[in-house]
Picture 1 (cartoon, rainbow, N blue to C red):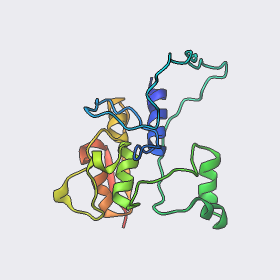
Picture 2: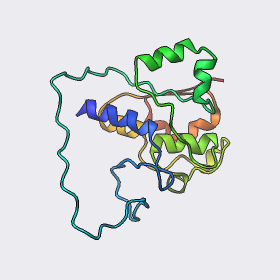
Picture 3: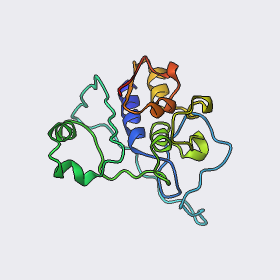
Picture 4: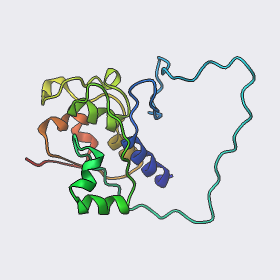
Length: 179
């Protein structure tokens, strides 16, 4: 179960639920409004059921830690061009994506809130892009909440003060701002 939650947390990092062409993750909190999709309403009998994947004979390794790294505004092609050897090493030994898409407009604070909560700004309400403590925090269950609910410890380190508003302070065991 913990392995599944860790994978879900990592998956939540890479998926964003803003726009009708992107996937959305379950939040554990039911929505009162339906989520728009491109899936047409079926008029015929549903297709035959696809069997649920079964585990392979190769056991998955236990994951001791999950490290989520976000480079604000970094284009994927710049990683190879700049010879970012440490980033390339992380990519070789972990999970990553070079095809993630952001929300529109692509502002730092709303984008990171969407990435961590898994919803668009209309749901998490973060539409500002500067540190405004009186505005509060992103609404919804974020990856830190999911980790805590699974009994895991969390650390949040940011290089921009405004990113302190993506999660409530009590959602992390340790938080630091590097300036």
